[in-house]
Image (tube, rainbow, N blue to C red; front, side, top):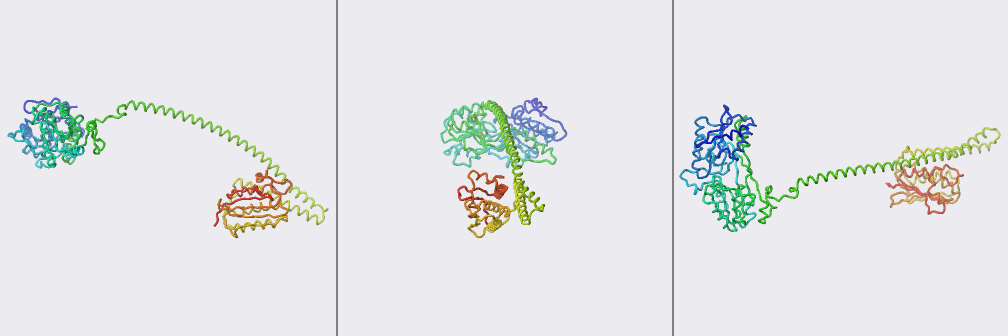
Length: 636
């Protein structure tokens, strides 16, 4: 992109560099002042992010970039003058609409100015700490200088700071961590280097440590000590000391130290507990710490710039602190025998031993995928096997059902034949008598007494034929479900007495009719007409086969089975053992020559079962026959 190309071709001369103009427009200028050469990685990344986001949002203003080319802290006396020269140059031509300061040194130089352009022009900052120090006068010895820490949020009311993204270092949370793991700690050794960032962080730590008078603060200052001297001091620190690392890049020799020097500091005293306030030493030396979440702030500053200058109404977001987070080195904590379980909520863990899945992630995924494929194939095979077996079972079941249907059809055909044979015989007998004696009555040969006798025969056979047809119709309608049972409350005792009286009135026997009941009245919800039909059928059958003796109707309440038991007992010929079950089948009669259709007991069985009861022959009674049936008890 054009912005990256312009950054790379920036010309740096002896003195101050020539400004780089990113875009030309008639709107107000955006002046970006950086602490270091824009080609350095941190500055370049943030500038690139700024340019991309500002263009993406549609910004069209002129962007000018100036660099202060800051190096060591020893030249801090020159920074204020360099910043003044840059601001004076733009004050003579056209004051910028916004000044953006990237880096600690540029920010410190800016807040050390007393000019009108510095205090009145809207300013933003990035890559800076929330706690800073104002640059000293030329006469101050920087090695012995002990400045006061200033807070960007409240100590610069004279400056027009409209926005910014700053890192906040938290001493309190780091002291809390030290005390959590080392409650006997008495001293804190703070390490800072020979840079402006190290000096401002040292000033902030000194200010914050005043809250803890019980703790002694030891300064391992890169301004006064070389790497070897700091290493030697660390070697002789006692067991009641915890180290807090700030920054470590340059020592008093003003030579940039390599990153691996922190490994040498670690090896100088391997048992010394070390915590970090700015991520330095994490991953190999420090146990952990509460540190800012460092990231490129160029994008956020571009958004704030566009909203402030090019938004519809303009807006000041104010200085925004970059959030912090707890970070712990799990490996180092295990080396020190510290518990890594009860850490602050949301803490980030580094150097954590990867689990089996993390180490063999792709192998596991491949094996699982292959296993799932095999499982899928197995399930498909099982599905088809089950389906084939199911179809086989259905075929076998269909075959069995067809066989049963065939047997039922044959049985139905047999029953139809038997029914027609029985019906032809049963209907023909009374019908022949009716037709025969009706023809005799037509003739003139019979006397009056004979005619009366013939009429009586015709009447009885007509009743028998009507009874037969009614029984056939009843059993047919019951089996087809066309008869509805209407339940209503009735007195069972009274119903039994009525049935007994009816049977006694029509009796053709000398047997005595009896009635046994434990109560004088019993209300039952039932179909009284059908129940009465069962009783009369049983009593009539008893009378038919009992020429003498007694016929007894009895009722009994069975609390155990919650039912009412009816029994009809006689002293007649009884029922042979082989016919006690078949007696309830259609057209089944004890005596083929006895009067009747053989349907009465079949009708009784259907009625009793529809009423919710059972009917059977008492096989233990040997003096005649005893029929017993039950009815569910719903006593009121």
